[in-house]
Image (cartoon, rainbow, N blue to C red; front, side, top):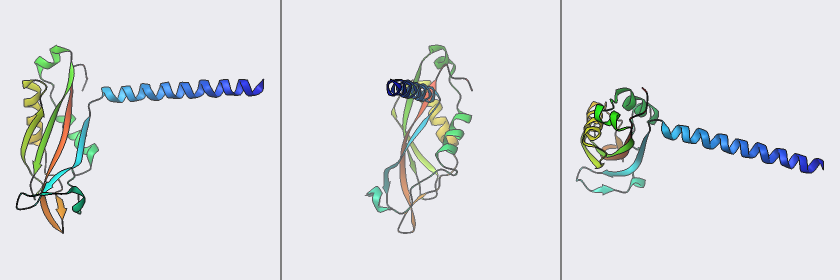
Length: 156
């Protein structure tokens, strides 16, 4: 009888923790996020793609991904027309980073709206230099893929 009671309590606690964890995950999904693929591709000086496993240092943002997220969302302005839409969505981007760490090209891979696309590109143009990728001790051109989430209901 005591075992049955203990199993019931354990089941209740585990279900409660699972539900609590799911609620926190859903809460985090609603927050503005940036997902970055650091192993997208890198090219050498001859513009030939290098296998990501064949370089020494990955391209990175000063302070890491959290600093990049903070930079993006502290500078992000949700366009007025998007605010009125009461929607959310993501703009997917590819950026090219030269040997000095400067973003030299950006491309919208998946659009959301013209105004959010324009804002995403504006943010990209504000980015400070990255720490460039390296191969065999030399800085190399690299590419990053990521998205910027726009939420018309999010509060700054």
